[in-house]
Image 1: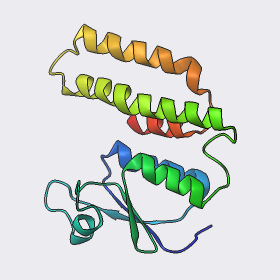
Image 2: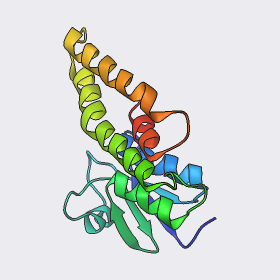
Image 3: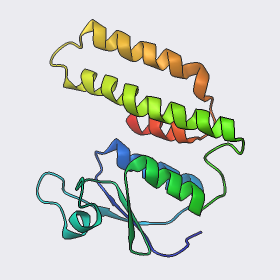
Length: 155
């Protein structure tokens, strides 16, 4: 289902790269994965493709770079429209984008607070994460969506 050459500059440990991989898999988009060593020297291609942030993921579609995971997922959804990752209704699309943004801002920080804890995880960090998951529980449903991809990549 390819529409030209697709290359993903990624790192196995990045949840943000995983978002692009999940979206590509859902759409049946074939791509060449090029692993980046983020700690031992970034490739010239990465530095040229993302000169501002110098980080992954970067999707190269026919040589044109796209940066930032949410932008990449939206691009994949628009370029390969079937099956859609966003609802057809404008208000439902807006809700999906809201929850994706919520996950980026709240869940990622909460998970990082737990990961950064030494020894036993502080009770406040655990409680914050549980409360965030409760908020998400009724909002997302089971269908693959932009928000679902954002959440899945962090878990």
